[in-house]
Image 1: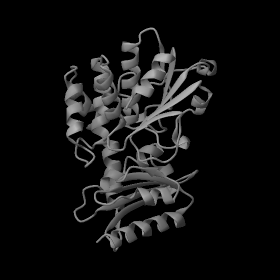
Image 2 (image 1 turned 120 degrees about the vertical axis):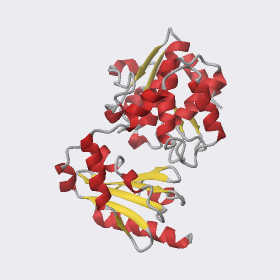
Image 3 (image 1 turned 45 degrees about the vertical axis):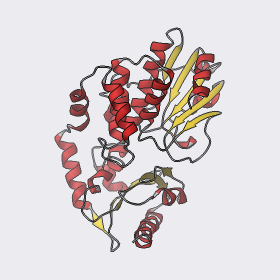
Length: 313
């Protein structure tokens, strides 16, 4: 499956790895993991990783993006990871590269690169990178393995989501055999500062339920700006407070910004991706997102979620 990507990697002496904006654990983990796998197995090549800051995943080793001059894209291969749409890529200079490739596990949205390996059956992009390493027989350092494992557990919800399979655990075992401390990952990943825990508590109090048992929160721009947290933490970070309400199969978090209303949609039961795509978004079958124009459009999306719940009873 990965042979076309491997041929490109062997052809180019300079490789620049991109991922999506506002990175999560899978985006950082797959990027850092692939970077260090390539550095170890192709020591004569120049390998870089670019993008916006790592945010709450800055605890991950080598998560600080490299500084790459524009001219380095000449005669370089750009590899885009964990990204379903061009508009989501962090650093659009990938277009300047001599060749482009993508490795992704989201549902297909659009063609991004000349060479693509996409497989939504994988729980994470880190899983795909791990499969690539296993198929190619690459040497994987403890650091690369730790990065990939971190992304694997974040995108599988600590192996809770139904995207988790026997294949997931085989790959996780392969990574763990490289030698790293899982307790270091979990402590950094799930230990929160008191202000963050208080933020989660405040969002729990904001939860509303529709008559069709869809949970939602709506945060106005004024409310968001009054909080001492970045937009990503408020939007994607807080949608999870609704994930374990008994009797609720779908939930959505709306956050107003200067660029529109960020929408994070989740479901434990239904394929909500078509609804996200209807509003110009995308993602996975049970975890998708979109950016909406205003509150009125957000309420229309909420009604679509209600209708989906009603239709599939």
